[in-house]
Structure formats: C-alpha cells, structure tokens
Length: 58
Ligand SMILES: [Zn+2]
Image (cartoon, rainbow, N blue to C red; front, side, top):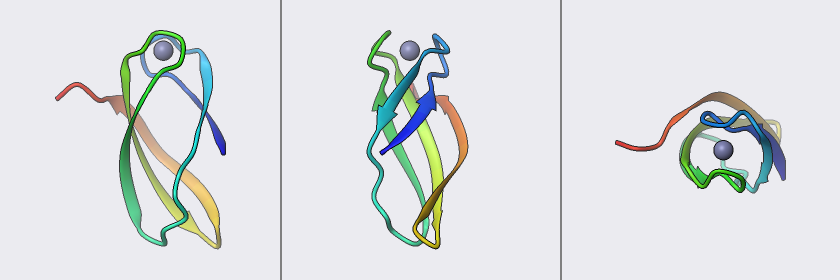
C-alpha cells in the first residue's frame, strides 16, 4: 500500500501496487475526484519507487 497525490485535485489517496521487479504503469481512479491517474513506478528491493503521476486520459 502506498499513498500518492492525485494529479488532478492534489488530494492524497492510497493505492495497491504489485511487487514485480520491472517498470510498471497502472491507471488508478482518484478516490476524491474519480479522475484516472497514470502511475509509473518501479520496484527495487521490494520498495516501490514512483517515477511519475500523470493524466490517465489518453
Ligand atoms: Zn483527485
């Protein structure tokens, strides 16, 4: 479980990310404003590193 800041409304909410040892991209809808956040992350030594959070509307 990890806390992120929404790209749209700047509120924080919690998401669940898998512990794969590669770079991943996932779309999570904000709990507050329901807009899709595109989360780019990587797992290193079981620690999740968030690279970027951007607009998930393609
Ligand atoms: Zn939001």
